[in-house]
Length: 251
Image (cartoon, rainbow, N blue to C red; front, side):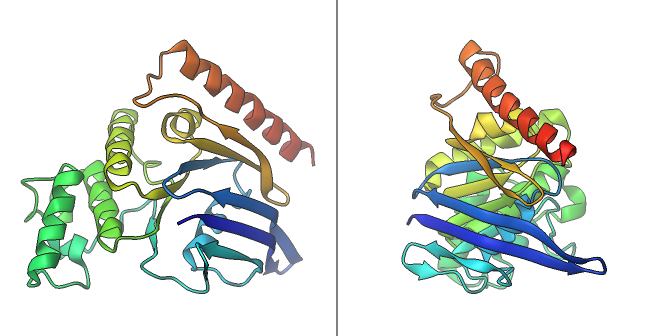
C-alpha cells in the first residue's frame, strides 16, 4: 500500500505568535520501501511522523495510506518511540500483546513468532527491569508489528543506545524488514544509520521544515560500512546535510 504525504502547512501557536514547523512537504512512498529521514534539530521530523501516524491532525494538507485518508491513529500505523514505553509490571510476551489476550491461541502464536523474529527467544517471561535498552526496544518493535500495520514509524528508536548495540539493532531491524516486507519510515540524526538502512534518504531543512532533497541509496543489502561505495554514498548525504545545516544557521 503506497503512502502519499501532502502537508501544505503545520504551525504551532506560541506566546510569540504562530511558528510554522512544516511547509510544502510532499512525499510518495512505495509499498515496502524503507525510508530514512534526517535533518537539523527542529526541522519537524518527529512532527512529520506524528502526522503520518494520525497523532497530529491539526495541519493543512492530507496523508493517504493507499486510498484511505489518515484522520486518526489506527492499527495501520505502528509507532516506535525513542523510549520503549514498556509496562514494568508486564512480561515481554504480555508487553507485546498489551491489550490483546494471550489466552487467544492465534495471538499467543503470533506473539511467539515475533519474539523469535526480534531475537528474544528465552526472554518471554522476563520483565523490563531484566532487559537491556536494546532488548526493550525490540519488545517495542514486536508490539507495533503484532497489529500488522501498513507502515512502521520509528522516531529515533536507537538514539539512546551505545554504538555497538545500535549497530546490532540496525541489523535486526533490516532482518525484520526483509521478513515482513513492511513499509518503514525511520527518523534519525545518524548519517551512517540513514545510509545503512534506507532505500531512500530524505534530507529535510528547517525554518520551516521542508524536504531539501531525496537521495536514492542504490546499494545492495547487506551493506558494509567500510566499502568505498558506502562511504561515497555517505559523503553525498553528508554534503546535503551540511548544506542544510549551513542554510538553517544562516537564517
